[in-house]
Amino acid sequence: MSLSYIALSSGRSIELTELRMSSTYGGFLEGYPCKPVNDMIVSGLQREAGRAFSAPVHLVPPCREYPDQTAGAFGPVEVLPDVACTGLFRSAAVAPELNPVLHRSALTVVWFQPVLDVPSGENAGLELRSIRWEELAQDYEL
Picture 1 (cartoon, helix red, strand yellow):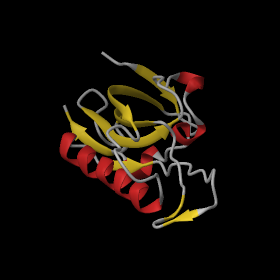
Picture 2 (picture 1 turned 180 degrees about the vertical axis):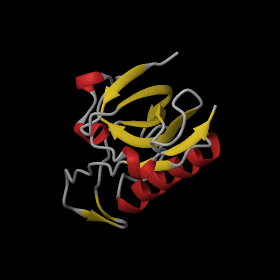
Picture 3 (picture 1 turned 135 degrees about the vertical axis):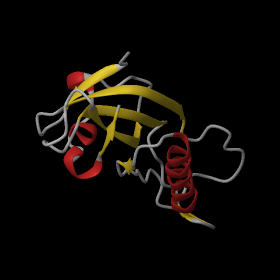
């Protein structure tokens, strides 16, 4: 069962089959959001996605906001969107010579979004709809 479908800018349809969402700064006890902290959050999500899924992992670079230019000990405040997402997407095989009945393609995507919402159709952000599936996804046999 698919959670949603997204039509990529390339015209390819991909299906979201698994989705993990969490608060970007959940469990953040002290300090403040800054580039070193955010880089650790992003790389941690990528590592976690690589362990959780057998498909290649692609990071959609997150938007970073700088609401306060006052620098603390670790530099200025830098804020990522509120919701960290990891999704497993599947689609038809990339290689045209593969049997479409026996083969599919998959890609694990890590991205951030401002609200707790399942991306679907036109509601999926441009950053998701712009994924270069043919370059990033990996074919597999059913």
